[in-house]
Length: 141
Ligand SMILES: [Zn+2]
Image (cartoon, rainbow, N blue to C red; front, side, top):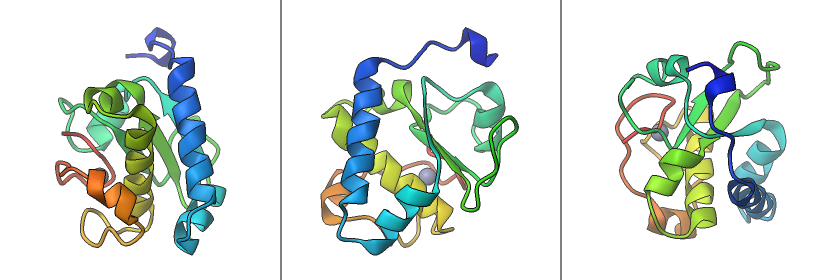
C-alpha cells in the first residue's frame, strides 16, 4: 500500500509515542537513554507491504519495526524505529504502556539482541512483554 493511502495515526497514538519517548529519556538504563536520543522514531498506522516483507512476515500484524536503513528516510547511525498504531492497539491494554514496551523491544533489535537477551528491557516493560514471532528486525505476531 502506498504511503499516501495509509491511514493517519491518531493524535492519541502520537501522544502515546511522545509519552513512551519521555519515559525512555528518563530511564534508569543508560542504554535506553542513549538509544532514544540517537534513533529516529516514526509513528505509522501499519507497515507498508515492503516493510512487512522486509520484516520477514508479509501476513503478520506488526507492532513495530527496526530497520538499519529505509528508502526515503534519512540514514541514522543506529537505524530507524517504526511504531505501528494498528498492531499496538490490537494488543489491547494501556496504549502508552504498549507503545513503550514495543519501543524497548525495537531498541533491542537496534542492539542486535533480537529476542534473545532483552538486555535493555526494564522490569515494567518486561512484565508486559509478550512473545513475538522470531523475525529479525520485526515484530509481528
Ligand atoms: Zn522483534
